[in-house]
Structure formats: structure tokens, C-alpha cells
Amino acid sequence: MVGPRGPQQNYILSALPAEERARVFPHLELVPMPLGHVLQESGIQLHHAYFPTTAVVSRLYVMEDGASAEIAVVGNEGIVGVPLFMGGETTTTRAVVQSAGHAYRLKGQLVKDEFLRGGSLQHLMLRYTQALMTQTALTAACNRHHSLDQQFCRWLLLSFDRLPSNELVMTQELIANMLGVRREGVTEAAGNVQRAGLIEYRRGHITMLDRAGLEARTCECYAVVKKEFDRLLPKVIPQYSPLYAVPKSSFSFQLAAR
Figure (tube, rainbow, N blue to C red):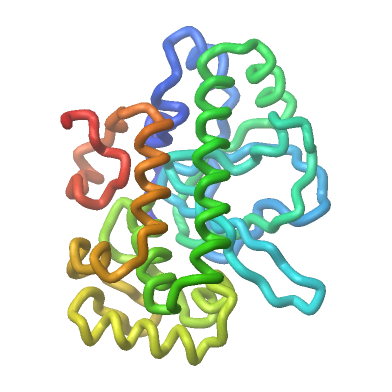
């Protein structure tokens, strides 16, 4: 698990003006996010929103027979708890920690109060929601029309974009649950991508070796989602501690210098 960092490591929180930070930051609670932890369950009223800093959270739709598939992934670019400020209070999906780390938690009522003020946080969360809708739509289209190899590469890139390193800890069973496929399919896809020299995969650890190669191997869905997030979210570079300095290539949204 990656060590905790400040609230500014989340792109939404980092983009808030000083006045809104002064209202919001004192109420943020740093919480650990262990692998596999369920943050939100389908049909259960939400009480908190989560702003990941070093963790990555998967949103899954779970069928009646227990089968599941990932519809979106949330990292330090966003927020887990969109129904709170959209007025739904509950969700039809499950939120599960895909990569261990930390997040900042904010009480649901405080999220709604700040949203209704109509300031920068409202603006940022609405733009993030639009980007998230794009990711959800492209995930559905990708799962229907593209090969498992392409889906696997898309999933890897979206995950690595939200991680502070080029290594992901994930079992084949969890990946299969995310992609909504059989475990044997994940074994074949991971083997194909590894033989191409793009990743190293062993004992639940996936190391990215060739980002450009992964981008070339995946379908257009990844680029569309990335472009929409880059368009809608602020181009800010979180204030990372030198202790946790990482290569710029590890982040999707670190584009302020362009």
C-alpha cells in the first residue's frame, strides 16, 4: 500500500480556491483503502464521499447470480460518491478498492452543502461526472465490440494512469471480475501482452514496461476517455512530496506544461 499524501494529491481538491479549501479541508478524514475493501454497496444509502489520493477504486455492476463487471475506475482524478450531490443518495453499483492506498473521506451532508453553494467544487464535480459518464459509456461499448486483449490493455492503462508507480498488484481472479470474463481469458490476454514485451506479470504483480506499446495495442476507447478527462478536468500538478516523487509518465492528467 502506498503511503498517505495530502489532500492536494487529489485533482478535484487540489483545484479548489483558497476560500473553499478553508471550508472543506478541516473536515476531510484520511482513511486507509485496503485491497478489496467495499466502500459502497448497491442500494445502500451513501453517507460519505471519498477523494482518492493513492488508491484506485473500481465501480462494479453485480448481477443477481454474483457475476460482475467493471463500469468505471476512479483514482486521484476524481471522487467516489457522485449520487450524493446528484440527488440520488444511493447507487446501483458497488465500489471496491482495486489498488490499495489512501483517500480522504468527507461526510455526505457536507458534500451536499458545499455543492449547493454553487462554487468551484460544484463546477469541478459536475465536469468530473460528465467525464465519468463518458468512461462508463465507452466501457460498455468496448466490452461489446473489442477483443479481450484490447479490453485488458485499456483496463491496464486506465489503472496505471491513476497509480503513483508502474506496478499494479492484482490477482487474475480480481481482473476477471473487473472485466466480466472467465479467469482463463485473463490468463490468455495477460500472456499475450507479456509475450509482446509490454508488461511483466507474475504472482499478482503487473509491471508496465512499454506504455506506448500498450496504447498501440488497445482500442480507441482508451484515447477517447483520456481526452475527455483531460478536456474537462483542470490541468494541475499535485504538490507531491519529494519522498514520493514519481515519473511524469505515470499520470494521465499531468499536462500543465503542455
